[in-house]
Image 1: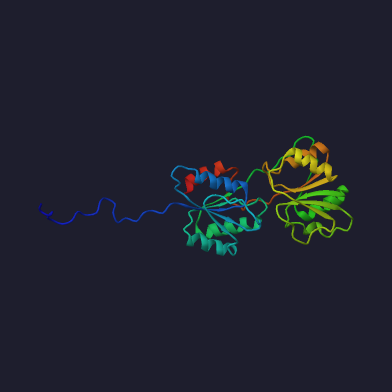
Image 2: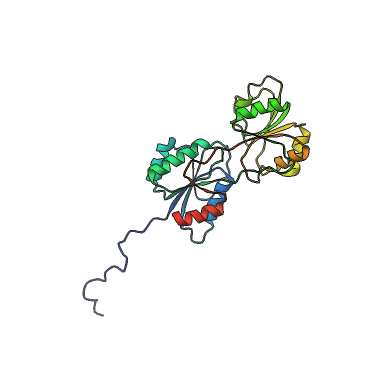
Length: 271
């Protein structure tokens, strides 16, 4: 059999062209919404989006989302902007806690510097209903003052383990039940009991907490969402005042989504 003659066949159509990289999404996470967004992207047929979730590292045993995970800070807005450029991030979603104000403003500055589209994924705030006795305040310090005005003596404090300093200097004998995922960090109130627990919480469970500890006032941040909302219903049923710390605003000009589904729709346009 004769060997073939002539030049070898050339490369097929498209040979030698660079393969385009998939879109790279960075999620600033730590919330249920962030994890659900990563799960929804991972469940899409064929994938198509590289997802990295960044966690601050403040919780000892976080629930990890699918995809790549990095833990720790970026070194301010400049460090975040450098990371976005170095890892060729095509979109940034700030799905941090509604009260993580510093990282949200850092994200806005970094996204503008790196020319990366930014979305803030924020669960809607809570709204009061008939029978609620809510006292809105602008800060934790104002919340502490409100407890004095209300004459509260046994307080269910659900603002997180790192935000207790505003209540630490009280010398009026007020007792606090502090609930958090990990043990609180000082400074914290002198008269305090810690309840280590992670949501979601049930209405029956919240009723029992208020009854067992003889709570006469509740303090919470307006985090929104369903996981920790039953305490509000339990407080309403018991006729207890609730001091609600208002959440900070999203940085001006940043697009917002209230649900992971809305965030997916935004990503379809911007990646």
